[in-house]
Amino acid sequence: MVLGGALAFVAAMIAPSHERPRLADALDGVLDALARYAQLATGEQPREAIVAARRQLGLALERAEASLERMLAEPAPLRHRAEDAMYLVTYARRLSASLTDVLEHGGAIPSDVSAYLVAVIDNVRAHFAGGVVTTAIRAPHVSALMAVMQRAELLAQLATRESVPQVR
Image (cartoon, helix red, strand yellow):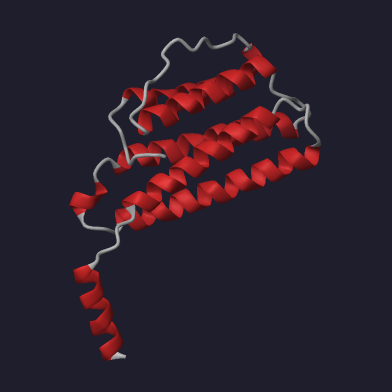
């Protein structure tokens, strides 16, 4: 048992494994799943497809949260910009909950709102990847969906901050 611990210690010193690249992949998975869920939230798809997309989003959020927790357990210099990743996970979860609330109460997201949400998510992805952020996204005015829109705006605000781990 001691020999195994010593071997693991030596291996960690020679080739350390950091969570930051895995967190970037997990955040990318969240953005993919969230965009897909927003596209299906128009209600034009069968309920089974929407439920499957919601399940995939939930799994992606759980993977991202677990990866974020592992990154926070690493030494302080390796936790640079962790707060941005926390914001992304938090507001992705809140946007998901808002979409689910609308869908589970017999509603659907209008297609222009869905397109707006997908554009916001694409902007966040572009920002994280160091790409060009489209600033001219026009939000549709749908008063019944203001909670959903506010969640999207909070997610969009991430695109104005400095970059967190690179998302591919």
